[in-house]
Image: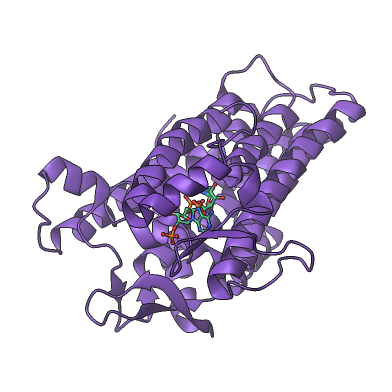
Length: 361
Ligand code: NDP
């Protein structure tokens, strides 16, 4: 089949639109957690991910309804679109790395991990990391919608409820991130990572396409006929995962903003302290040191199972990716926190023994 050049250019148009909307749409201006190296003060951010993604989705639906594009357009051009996104990811990442002075690490390490930790453009109006996550989220939503539409158009009389559940859970996953966009300012990516291929190419290519790998592979397949009680169970695994991840992230966010606040009205902030610094050891943070990572893995598991083809390898790549990402990340974070908190971290480790899975790991 000949290459569809419109498909190749589609990510450029979509990313450009998201970027333009991010600049134009009124945003909440908030103080973050990462420190500006020049001023020693926290960086400021403009957050409007939710309205921007809603606007993109509305434009997309309008274009489909008026038959400007087919509902499953992004499915039919998925290869070209992924290649186009990959090209943008490479060009942006190279630019982001080479515009900054070297940190003294090897070029390979700098290319992958980046040089600048918190680049902001247009006089601080656009934060690189937040816009990268926004672009990736918007493209992922459109891919999920389009890939699901492909299944519906192909099997209009026997639509897979599991595939629809999968799409709804993915929608939930992305919109949850957008609703709680501010909480993301308190995460590792924002305060500890630099912008290179990992973040740049990762958000522009890997995130919107790899996350949809289950749908990519299985959208053309017929309804596998998964029994409803099993689907409810898979939904429950996802839901439990979401509660763990969102609960832990919100508890830490609440604590960092007001160390004495009672989370959800009943989880008091019990802590270990060295007099000047405190670490939470109650609620989610008392169960394991990264219960949020277990939550992400469970969400991935629920998503993989819901598609109803357990013998296909493709949906499993998604939860596997989380295991491969988060297990080393926990080790990294542990080292970082040991260096930052010293004996206080040892005390916390003694109190909360498990790294990720209570009773197991
Ligand atoms: P955490 O939210 O667990 O943050 C770790 C940091 O929290 C530590 O460096 C430390 O920072 C602080 N901290 C650790 N323990 C405590 C404690 N007991 N009390 C108070 N502060 C503590 O990890 P991440 O930032 O890696 O992850 C955030 C979320 O993002 C998670 O849910 C994760 O799963 C998710 N994620 C999602 C991805 C996706 O693609 N969907 C990819 C990667 C992550 P400090 O020095 O500030 O105290």
